[in-house]
Amino acid sequence: MTIPHSPVGSFVFAGDTYCDLVFSGAELPGVGEESWASGFRIAPGGVATRAVASARTGGSAVLFSRLGDDPLGAYTHRVLQDEPRLDTSSVVVVRGAQSPVSVAVSGAHDRSFITYEERLPDLPVPSAQTRYAAVQVSLSEAGVPTWVADQRAAGARVYGGVGWDGTGKWDLDLSALLTDVDVFIPNELEAARYSRLHDPRAAVKWLANFVPLAIVTMGKRGVVAVDSANDVFVELPAAVVESRDPTGAGDVFTGALVTAASWNIDLRTQLLIASLAASISVTRLGGATSAPTWTEIVEFAHRIGADELSSIDPVLI
Image 1 (tube, helix red, strand yellow):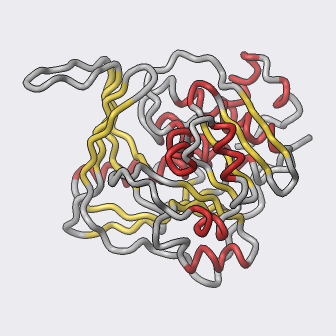
Image 2 (cartoon, one colour):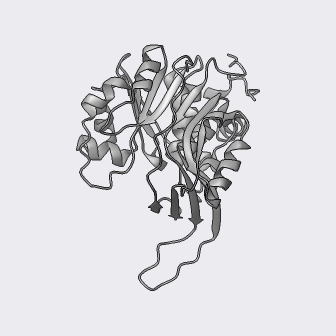
């Protein structure tokens, strides 16, 4: 089976781009104490990680986002502009604004964040005349934007995600929001909080009542998915790797999946590709900067004996 060099159509990733300051090999210090990190990186984060991961896997990714013209925002913008296969022409630079910034303090298997974010103008939206194969957005109380619904009506596959609920309420009405989404990808904590079910397998089955494809990522324990349209349940373990920084691993998973799902391969293989991409990413620092290329995914699969990828042409980019 040979995958075309460029999947048909482009994929839109819309949302907030952060400048991540990542400290690895460290623990949060106590009050009045100081902690030393073994690694440091400045990297694009947020939706940019998903877009970069999609592009590096072989997709034609388009980023719809905005940044301030502050020094960190300018650096983040340059890094994204230099990314092959990533269209950044729809990234708006807001004069006089501070870009969102997250400080990530990361240990071997988890991390903590401190984030600063100012209100920026509304996200840019695609032209009504331009059609895309897939759209990835974060869900909120406001629901799916009109332009996303229009893209879906024209044939785009919509991927939805959620972020951390700082209010602690976790009360989004997913049964209503997911009617406008084709694929929903929370992590196991998010799935548990919204479903009130602490077993990821039970949670993903509950979510599948509201969306055609529900996927719950479980970090080093792998991923579970339910394709309710075809009555398929898939569970995959994660590859065993030495984790340096899990920042953005879920975003890498999502971006790689958006690309892999555009190919003529089964769901299990799509999830395997996305899972391997996420596993590679945790061995590196940063969000977007940790995303592997398709060639790196294939080479990693060969090393761990993932024979499912052996029939896929590795010459993608």
